[in-house]
Image (cartoon, rainbow, N blue to C red; front, side, top):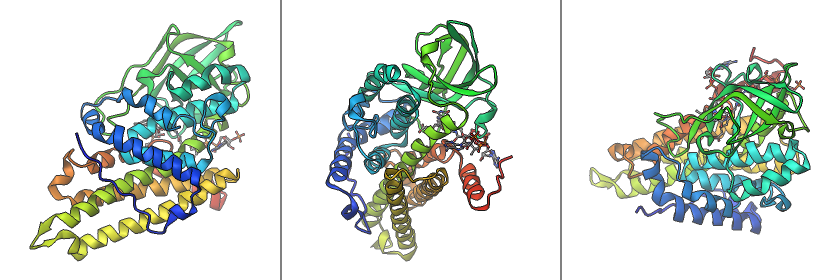
Length: 392
Ligand code: TGC
Ligand code: FAD
């Protein structure tokens, strides 16, 4: 069993800006990751399996619905606490953070925000406790960056809807109990439907052979004439803006989460550089290694400040989609670069599972693509500052 020696970098004393509650929530998540995730995660990533035994721990640290009101089983926390929880979980593994992001921002958020009271009461407490796990079906085989082109559809059959189509690349799909699925009605308008495991014609085959997010289960959602009860339609919002609103919440969490992965790589590389001796000196004493480490801590500090300010804006209800895109894009690219540089500092040891860096690096190759690719987020910023959409 591996010992987790992580010490969190805080170069600009950002802890001074956090409230007592933020620190309590952050430290509880940090301790849990050290105790329950770090010792086992490498083995699960190697065997490409999600460690289901950590679900109850995720629920206990408030990772399922951190900002959902306590009446529905959520933790009733603010957006900075939500971000800090995501940061700590992704410090352990991006795949575990994926599971929490999907459950909170892509399943509980739409049910809370677009659902009616019966739907909230039926699903949210069970999702908050981890008794039920959820998935979110937006992407299709032929529609990834362009979800508005989706072909998954439902028809009104009087007392139920008939759902047909396929979703690809869906986190948590292989074991989900419920799926929030985005599909077009007969007029071509996008709606959210809650599909439950066990409905006839609904299947969730797993996607194998991933080199990334190996400790997270990914799969398909297939609908072959699935009869969905009418009460399972999310009534309060429709159109592409409904799923995109969920993505705002998940992308915000990823902007924080990526900092966790970067901090873990930096901390590992710094410790290794102090201990590894070549040419009679610790490699940390060589200028080239110092350049890497100094640039890493600078980039981590900038990302921390970006995420903190975005959290304040989110708490005030002022964070725009474009601001969230900027933070997701910047912080994930920052983390991926730091993982690559850290891997080099460890030399040959950097490619082994003895250290977390290569796992983070491979995980981040998915994180830079999902929830909107690096390119798409640049185009969102470009459209925001110029007024010209360059997607189409
Ligand atoms: P566009 O014409 O720009 O917008 C369509 C309608 O939506 C409105 N809207 C938003 N509403 C709420 N929140 C947002 N963030 C919104 N962004 C846009 C917009 O105002 C418009 O409304 P209306 O009333 O005028 O119709 O749409 P477009 O078709 O041009 O596409 C824009 C684009 C490319 C930015 C968007 O589709 C996009 O973000 N593409 C990337 C797709 C993506 O991110 N997929 C993620 C799938 S889920 C996932 O990856 C989970 S991984 C989770 C994990 O494991 O952690
Ligand atoms: P494409 O859209 O085909 O893009 C391919 C390339 O073309 C990219 O580099 C892209 O930036 C570029 N490109 C596309 N359009 C443009 C343009 N207009 N201008 C310039 N360049 C462009 N989806 C879900 O719905 N739910 C999930 O739970 C989920 N989990 C995922 C888990 C994993 C591990 C992965 C890898 C993906 C997951 N996704 C999920 C899907 C993810 O959101 C998509 O992969 C992502 O949105 C990109 O879509 P795509 O893979 O089809 O790439």
